[in-house]
Image (cartoon, rainbow, N blue to C red):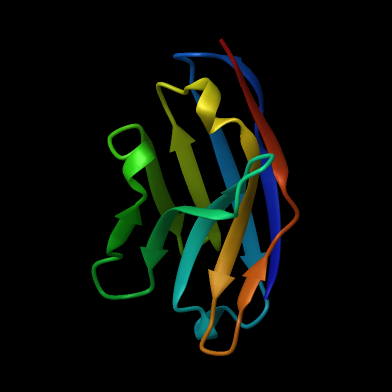
Length: 116
C-alpha cells in the first residue's frame, strides 16, 4: 500500500486546516485508514480512524473529538482529515496510515503548526 499525504501548514489557534491522503496498491486488504501524529517529545498517537466496514465506523482520540472529522472517498481512494478549532497542542507531524492484517503502512508526514 502506498500513501501520499498533502495539506498541513501553519495556522493560528482557532483556525482550520485540511489534510488529504491518496492511497494505492493493495487497497482491498486495508482494514482501516487513519491519521496519526508525532509531536516532539511524545509518542506517535492515533488521531482518527475510519474502518473499512459497511458503515465506515470511526474512532477519534479524546483530544480531538468534536474538532476533527475523518472521511474517505473509496471512488477516489482518498482519506481526509478536517481539523477545526485547532490548538497549539495539535502541532505535530501528521501521517496517514493504512492497516492491513499484516502491518501498518504510513505515508510521509506533513507538518501542522498551530501558533498561539
